[in-house]
Amino acid sequence: MEIHYTLSEAAKILGVTVKTLRTWDNSGKMITIRTPGNQRRIPESEVMRLTGQNNSKHEIKAAENSSVILMCKNTEVYNVSKKEVLSKDLLPGCIKRNTMSYSQWMKTRYSANSNVSARRLMLVAFGSDNHENVIEATRTLSLSDCYWLKRQDENVSFFDITPYIHKEWDGSGVFKGGSISTLFVNGAADKKWLDSRTLLKVRSYKEYEPYVLCYTLGLDNAAEAKVSDEGILLTNFTSTDFFLESMEQSGFSKKKDNPRERAVEIFKEQAVTLFVIDYLVEHDDRHWGNYGFLRSSNTGEYVSMAPYYDFDWSWSDSVVALPDNAYRDYSDLIRSLCENALHFSDKFEHKKIISKRANELLQTL
Image 1 (cartoon, rainbow, N blue to C red):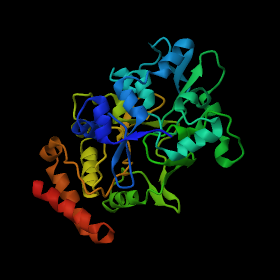
Image 2: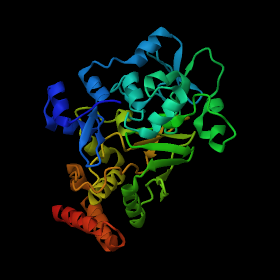
Image 3: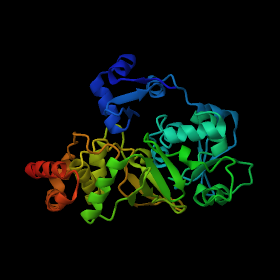
């Protein structure tokens, strides 16, 4: 089992302050998990990556095989071993804009080591819970985007292997590698795909009311969420025609930028609304890996902001201030959202928190 360090332990190893680690975590630069008491822990693999000791096995593997190609559906996008662009329009945004290497981008698509469901499935299917050992078998297929890997000489089509329409979902097919897409789900929360349209977030009940608040306020840009005995069920908002690219993966926000301010610049009212909802429900983990774009998998066009998703750390007793440009340019929108939230707050279990935070925001205007 992997070792998990406290912030102070990791800070000593990395030679930085605990405050720096908190900043890295909030900005999405570092992956952490939370204990039942909501304390941050850093996986050993993440500490190794940050120290530069975790060499990129993806690039090493590609160098041994000169014909590994990154595909988007049936279009050749990138020759991994030669680092050669084959379709600029369909490149992952961060590679296109030179903010990440191929290997760095690939890591953003993984379930973190703390995703119990993914680790259990890997152990059953492969006898290993190391993503590095399952890349070839799974082709890194995902239900978040339409990227996958193939050898250049293979005669195989995206529609032969895509998890969106794989027969294993209806029970008529048997897993033979490739489409076990739950292994490649962003984030650390325990989650798994029940079918190509339904993501189960295990025992994540506290996440439900933020979605209900979105619906109550009449916001149509939120993922569809329902409650089940096992946890929250989210309806997949991607397809074979439109995929998710997080702000981190897009490359539109660089290291020197404030990703939240950049989101307001790009998504305008939609980003401001998301950050207001986060404030009202005390969701303090809106890093640049859990909001982003919907892109066309046919043209690479950036179509819209992705629906609001991932409220894992709601009701944290902590808030993150809205970015300055939100206050400056969208004060009327913020006021309207807070006033409406106060009007409907009695309908919610967390009504005291919603009212408290709404009044706080109103006082800042």
